[in-house]
Image 1 (cartoon, helix red, strand yellow):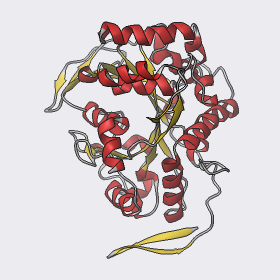
Image 2: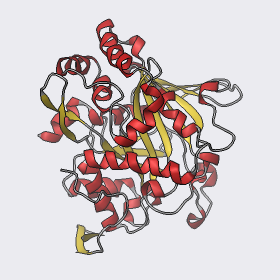
Image 3: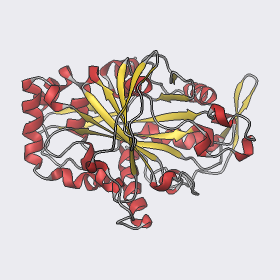
Length: 372
């Protein structure tokens, strides 16, 4: 293992111990002007920024209520997350390579800011299908975000008690936020709806097993035809991605500010990753910054791998990617000594403008640029 040190001219290399974290598998893996709807328990006023309209509504839907006490043990919950992570790393060698690279430079635990999933908003396969697993462990529904141009909505969930503490790396570290999006199928063309409903109907009650499907890397519906995948891709790359990947973990996000080295700055981390030969999503610029300047995000471009379609053809399809997020300290805590800063002192939540661009990490345009 090589350790890379930052100096005035770039990064130098020294020896380091091999990375033995559970983050890496034991075998080598062969957003625009929009509406964001928050859902607190009491109505408050509407606020407008340059880049998005924030509408704060009333009480949350009963569909997304967390339980009063976890219905599963923490060891079981983390074991399921570990299985999801294993599938993700097997399909996305870039993610594993970057996790190892970062750990070789910064020996501190790598913490996940959030995990993200994509779903079809139809026939019980939408946000709630995956959210149920997290709600039953005590996660809490927070803000809803809307992406009209992409015909998407998303909801993010905070871990039990907003507790981001914990030891270890990855899924064995602090519990991450969870970001689940869904395609608003009823807004798609009649042909796209026909294709999506064909497969969700074949799935039947498969939405009840979203977490299981993610953990074993399986679709809950039958493999699609290549022609139907291509039809969906022409209208919505999100829809096509979900058709062939299902509930697979779409991405994990490294919490950069929790690192201990110079890589805690996302600016340094982006530079470090690019200098080591990895392509970052350039949609809207490599660095995505929230209007308040307190949430900074970037991501790689998705990996691709061969998928065997139902008609006997095999084609490369986009898989997943890895994201990076730095949450800066909120203004009201600017005088808190750095050594005393906790996660609650930092900017929370997500931003429509940032997320809209991050979605492009699996787009044909970004994959083409990566291959160039």
